[in-house]
Image (cartoon, rainbow, N blue to C red; front, side):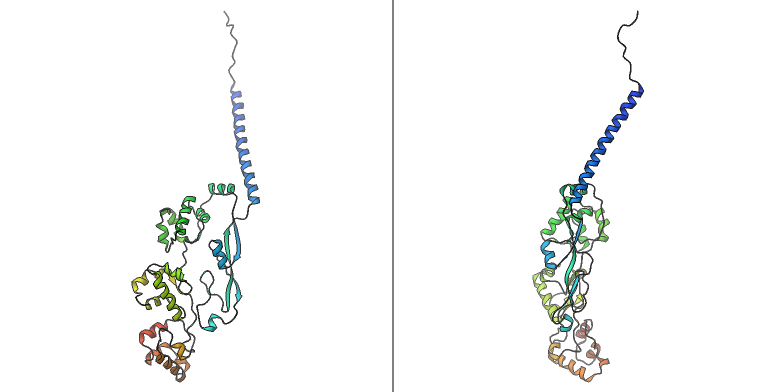
Length: 331
């Protein structure tokens, strides 16, 4: 007896293959459409956006007001000074650019090239952060922007924590201070250590607030450092800080690696009159000042040395040794 029920043909292997290929093409087409849509949107956003970095000329006051990030390594625009220069007047330290380098005599910095990270659309920023590439470059942890911290490999939350610490008055004086931050992992610090660039403080250009922030200084010693700088006409070497009353070796050692002295105006030991010489801390005597003038008048020019002043009994050996380390005018 024959089976009268309808036959059900099993789908062939070829049908499965066609279906699988169609599904694969559908998935690929969908992913391609998403990719093209996203890429097109990014392209449109980028075309309307600003460049990643904008370089502008700005004065120091404008930089501070705008919260400008770290300056680029570039020479500032110069302008010729009006009136007597620091060198000709014999007063004040030599002018410097933003990197501690001395400017030509008779010129001063007018503007400095600075870098600002331009704002981008929120969509572009989100995409960049999601696909960002960790970079390594020189930076000052006290001034580096949140955006650049993210480029260095920190998360947005970690970068903001560092910025909040600085906003509350926190400061990284040494590389080790940055390493001890709770958001800086040991592995990250090892990668970035050689790129950390914390400029030393110039004793001949620092203001009271900058000096106050040094370890162990405070308002009293900051004021004394400024007053002694005026008496000296500019520090010639950092150890001169220990001339200040109660500024001992221990206090100096706590900050010696944080400070330096730019080139001061030379002291006119061989040109100034007696009343000006007497005001210098290492002479500090009208009798010694008059003796120096007499020494110049009765000694050949080739014999004008600080050692000769000490040998003649005009200056005590200790004071002469300190004066010999100062920047002096040529005989």
